[in-house]
Length: 170
Image (cartoon, rainbow, N blue to C red; front, side, top):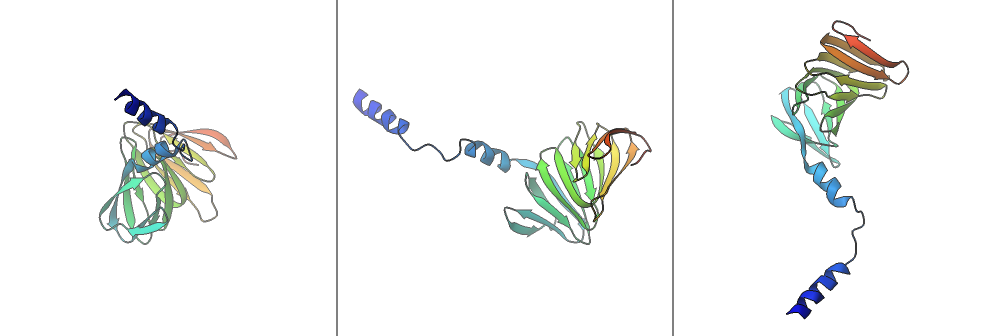
């Protein structure tokens, strides 16, 4: 009996190691829900792992998803972070469970209980809980931020860190 148990553990110890020691962890974290998207009207697409899906009502978002809003509007909810309304001709990526990367278009957002982040090729917008704001990125990559309520920190790669107070914009 002891000999067979020893042989079993010996075989387990001599198996080939995984190709990547991070593989089980990256698979686990990618499978976690990052939030949810619902279509208000019009065409909304999700690109996940190279496959395009049309959002007809609601869909779970995962880290790495690309969201394309055509001639419509969609609501994006990141749990406990913020709710964003993506306007027509907006393209963004779910970077993390609390961060979106806005490639182009307009996001109108309201922060919930925790801070959230929206990054662009030009900088990073970090919201405080309770902030209401709009971030837009033009076709040329220029970023515009309008703060409607509370405070925001904007880290512009060219201008440095800027604190916006209610009613201010850059």
